[in-house]
Amino acid sequence: MFSHIMLGVNDMDMSKAFYDALFDVLGAKPGVIDPKGRCFYFNDGNIFILSKPINGEPACNGNGSTIGFKAQDQAQVDAWHAAGVANGGTSIEDAPGIREGGKAGDMYLAYLRDPAGNKICALHRIPAE
Image (cartoon, rainbow, N blue to C red; front, side, top):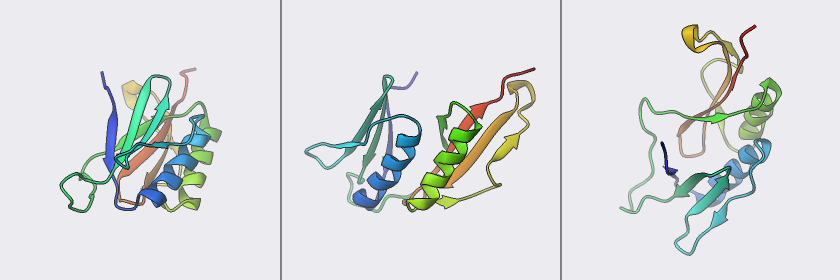
């Protein structure tokens, strides 16, 4: 469904360090900076990009927007959250933990704001018993 996800950043070095740490926990390699100064992450056919806005204005977060990253288990969600906080992210909403998902099933989630204020989460779907 998606070809890629791109987020605006204000400080590329800080944002790259933040996402390198998060994606390392999820098994991805560090980002690669292209000649235009954008940072690309490639993993399992997915592309995630960081870029300073091309209009020259400061990057800002989308109100009501969240980008979720799939985690293998609860421990990986916790490690992802810890790596984010240790690398300039801010823990938001409830502490990492189980959320009832109704028909979608229960999930183990953690939420962060990245250094540019974007809302992101790590999610592990808990198998139904």
